[in-house]
Image: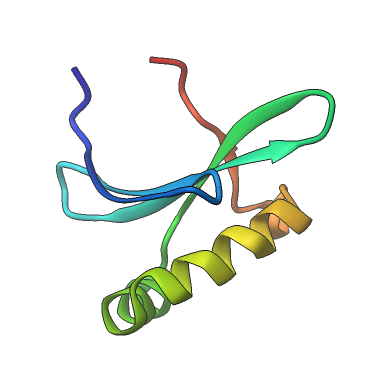
Length: 81
C-alpha cells in the first residue's frame, strides 16, 4: 500500500498525489509507442496555483509535461508499485 493519497485522478492520464509529508506531486503518462509515467514535485508556487485553480491548473501542467517529459530536468520516472 502506498503512503500517498490521490488528490485528483484525471482522464487526461495524470494524477495529483499528496505524500505523507504533505507535499504535492503530479504523475503523468507520457510517450508514444513506449509509454511510461513521470513524476514532478510541485514547488510552492505550483502548489498555491493548484490550491486556487484545481483541475484547470493540473490540466495545464500535465499537458506541459506531456509536451516536454524532462520538464526542465524536474521529472523523475515514477516508481513501479
